[in-house]
Length: 283
Ligand code: C2E
Ligand code: MG
Ligand code: MG
Ligand code: MG
Picture 1 (tube, protein in one colour):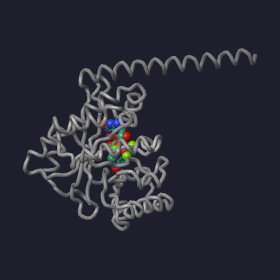
Picture 2 (picture 1 turned 45 degrees about the vertical axis):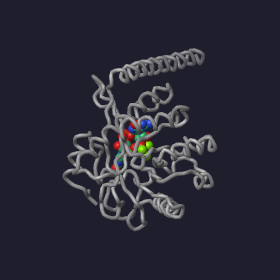
Picture 3 (picture 1 turned 180 degrees about the vertical axis):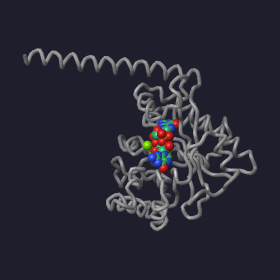
Picture 4 (picture 1 turned 180 degrees about the horizontal axis):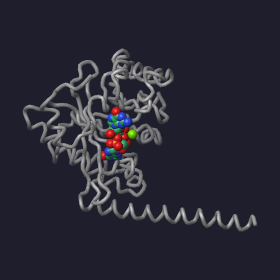
């Protein structure tokens, strides 16, 4: 009796595993094709100065325009792209496309200069050709280095801090800016943080979600803001959705804010229209 049950259980799990393995293979194949066919697009979300709502930057966020599945969120394909290494060609496309788009906006005299932020995955960050690639894309697109900011997660830099430090220094020497994304969720050694050539800390959106109701989240966010100021770093809060959250950030002296309160990520045309229409966003 119990033996039969065991067998059923085994069959159940193995069927599940087969199904998810097959789904994974399908998705991997589709992802590979999508890169060749150019099925990706970038959406853009403004970053605003907490003090006056002025747009100071924009983050490029990738989406997959699937022939049948519609617009697919990066949460669904970035992890697989990371595992399979497909993130390297995809990430190169993202950086080149974002820089080219930014140049088109800069050439429009009604649009003022600000920072373009682009995400780098851990695997992209560890890739040997990274610094050379960034240099090549800056030259090719005419993107001014001081207006490009690369976002890297804590995990990517803390895994091998010494190697990470030399990559960060090499990137910094190109004249670009560096940000730590999703700050507060990973494990950062503060000693290393001080030695890294970082410009911006981006407070993870999980903290904003619970502000101002949760004392713990509020205290952590306030501590990160204070620490960033003491280390002479800029600090940006992600996932800002309410006026109360923005008021909290203003009271604590946070520099920048990004979230649905100001704007959702928009396609390139909608973002350009937003810039022309309102140099300041809802605060
Ligand atoms: P992230 O870099 O931390 O980007 C912020 C995410 O929060 C975006 O999700 C954005 O749409 C979302 N968001 C912005 N404001 C709000 C808000 O007020 N409330 C809530 N609930 N969410 C908000 P998205 O676009 O789905 O991207 C998810 C993650 O995928 C990104 O997190 C980033 O880690 C990764 N990703 C996106 N584009 C790229 C890319 O081009 N390259 C790489 N390597 N990773 C990317
Ligand atoms: Mg980011
Ligand atoms: Mg983030
Ligand atoms: Mg994230």
